[in-house]
Length: 129
Image 1 (tube, rainbow, N blue to C red):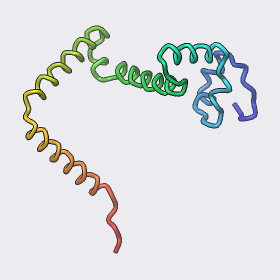
Image 2 (cartoon, rainbow, N blue to C red):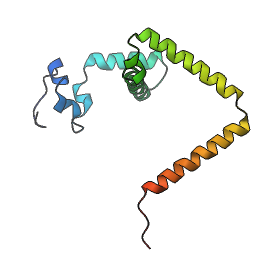
Image 3 (cartoon, helix red, strand yellow):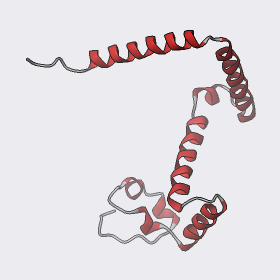
Image 4 (spheres, one colour):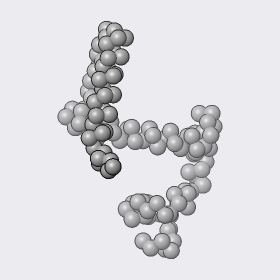
Protein backbone atom coordinates (compact mmCIF):
# COMPACT_ATOMS: atom_id res chain seq x y z
CA UNK A 1 0.00 0.00 0.00
CA UNK A 2 1.55 3.34 -0.98
CA UNK A 3 2.26 5.84 1.76
CA UNK A 4 -0.37 8.26 0.47
CA UNK A 5 -3.12 5.63 0.33
CA UNK A 6 -5.78 5.85 3.02
CA UNK A 7 -6.61 2.99 5.31
CA UNK A 8 -10.22 1.94 5.79
CA UNK A 9 -9.48 0.86 9.36
CA UNK A 10 -10.85 -2.61 8.68
CA UNK A 11 -9.38 -5.82 10.07
CA UNK A 12 -8.16 -6.58 6.54
CA UNK A 13 -5.91 -3.51 6.73
CA UNK A 14 -4.32 -4.67 9.98
CA UNK A 15 -3.47 -7.98 8.34
CA UNK A 16 -1.62 -6.26 5.51
CA UNK A 17 2.05 -7.11 6.14
CA UNK A 18 3.27 -4.07 4.22
CA UNK A 19 1.21 -1.69 6.37
CA UNK A 20 1.97 -3.56 9.58
CA UNK A 21 5.71 -3.53 8.98
CA UNK A 22 5.97 0.08 7.83
CA UNK A 23 7.54 2.30 10.47
CA UNK A 24 6.58 5.36 8.46
CA UNK A 25 2.89 5.00 9.29
CA UNK A 26 2.06 5.98 12.85
CA UNK A 27 0.19 3.25 14.66
CA UNK A 28 -2.00 5.91 16.29
CA UNK A 29 -3.59 6.60 12.93
CA UNK A 30 -5.11 3.10 13.10
CA UNK A 31 -6.20 3.28 16.75
CA UNK A 32 -9.92 3.50 17.40
CA UNK A 33 -11.84 5.26 20.13
CA UNK A 34 -12.37 1.91 21.85
CA UNK A 35 -8.58 1.39 21.89
CA UNK A 36 -8.07 4.65 23.79
CA UNK A 37 -10.91 3.82 26.19
CA UNK A 38 -9.32 0.45 26.92
CA UNK A 39 -5.86 2.03 27.29
CA UNK A 40 -7.22 4.61 29.74
CA UNK A 41 -9.12 1.94 31.70
CA UNK A 42 -6.05 -0.32 32.01
CA UNK A 43 -3.69 2.54 32.88
CA UNK A 44 -6.08 3.87 35.54
CA UNK A 45 -6.70 0.41 37.02
CA UNK A 46 -2.94 -0.22 37.23
CA UNK A 47 -2.21 3.32 38.51
CA UNK A 48 0.32 4.10 35.83
CA UNK A 49 0.72 6.48 32.89
CA UNK A 50 -0.68 5.31 29.56
CA UNK A 51 2.79 5.13 27.99
CA UNK A 52 4.03 2.81 30.74
CA UNK A 53 0.92 0.63 30.35
CA UNK A 54 1.61 0.33 26.62
CA UNK A 55 5.29 -0.38 27.15
CA UNK A 56 4.65 -3.05 29.77
CA UNK A 57 1.93 -4.57 27.63
CA UNK A 58 4.30 -4.88 24.68
CA UNK A 59 6.96 -6.43 26.92
CA UNK A 60 4.40 -8.94 28.25
CA UNK A 61 3.27 -9.79 24.73
CA UNK A 62 6.86 -10.45 23.66
CA UNK A 63 7.51 -12.64 26.73
CA UNK A 64 4.31 -14.59 26.05
CA UNK A 65 5.37 -15.13 22.43
CA UNK A 66 8.83 -16.29 23.51
CA UNK A 67 7.35 -18.77 25.96
CA UNK A 68 4.84 -20.06 23.40
CA UNK A 69 7.51 -20.56 20.74
CA UNK A 70 10.22 -21.86 23.08
CA UNK A 71 11.89 -25.20 22.35
CA UNK A 72 10.39 -26.51 25.60
CA UNK A 73 6.84 -25.79 24.45
CA UNK A 74 7.59 -27.33 21.06
CA UNK A 75 8.85 -30.50 22.76
CA UNK A 76 6.05 -30.66 25.34
CA UNK A 77 2.75 -30.31 23.54
CA UNK A 78 0.61 -29.61 26.62
CA UNK A 79 0.87 -25.97 27.81
CA UNK A 80 -0.01 -27.08 31.34
CA UNK A 81 2.81 -29.63 31.42
CA UNK A 82 5.37 -27.19 30.08
CA UNK A 83 4.38 -24.61 32.73
CA UNK A 84 4.73 -27.19 35.51
CA UNK A 85 8.12 -28.22 34.11
CA UNK A 86 9.23 -24.58 33.87
CA UNK A 87 8.23 -23.89 37.50
CA UNK A 88 9.90 -27.08 38.71
CA UNK A 89 13.15 -26.28 36.92
CA UNK A 90 13.05 -22.75 38.38
CA UNK A 91 12.74 -24.22 41.87
CA UNK A 92 15.61 -26.64 41.20
CA UNK A 93 17.77 -23.76 39.99
CA UNK A 94 16.95 -21.56 43.00
CA UNK A 95 17.69 -24.42 45.42
CA UNK A 96 21.00 -25.15 43.65
CA UNK A 97 22.15 -21.53 43.71
CA UNK A 98 21.20 -21.30 47.40
CA UNK A 99 23.87 -23.97 48.08
CA UNK A 100 26.64 -22.16 46.16
CA UNK A 101 28.82 -19.94 48.34
CA UNK A 102 29.15 -16.21 47.68
CA UNK A 103 32.84 -16.72 46.88
CA UNK A 104 32.03 -19.38 44.25
CA UNK A 105 29.37 -17.13 42.72
CA UNK A 106 31.92 -14.30 42.54
CA UNK A 107 34.54 -16.53 40.88
CA UNK A 108 32.02 -17.84 38.34
CA UNK A 109 30.96 -14.28 37.57
CA UNK A 110 34.57 -13.23 37.00
CA UNK A 111 35.23 -16.22 34.71
CA UNK A 112 32.08 -15.49 32.76
CA UNK A 113 32.97 -11.79 32.39
CA UNK A 114 36.50 -12.63 31.21
CA UNK A 115 35.09 -15.06 28.65
CA UNK A 116 32.64 -12.41 27.36
CA UNK A 117 35.38 -9.80 27.08
CA UNK A 118 37.69 -12.26 25.35
CA UNK A 119 34.94 -13.15 22.88
CA UNK A 120 34.13 -9.47 22.31
CA UNK A 121 37.80 -8.68 21.68
CA UNK A 122 38.11 -11.49 19.15
CA UNK A 123 35.08 -10.19 17.22
CA UNK A 124 36.39 -6.63 16.93
CA UNK A 125 38.68 -5.89 13.97
CA UNK A 126 42.30 -5.32 14.90
CA UNK A 127 43.08 -1.66 15.50
CA UNK A 128 45.41 -0.23 12.88
CA UNK A 129 48.48 1.60 14.15
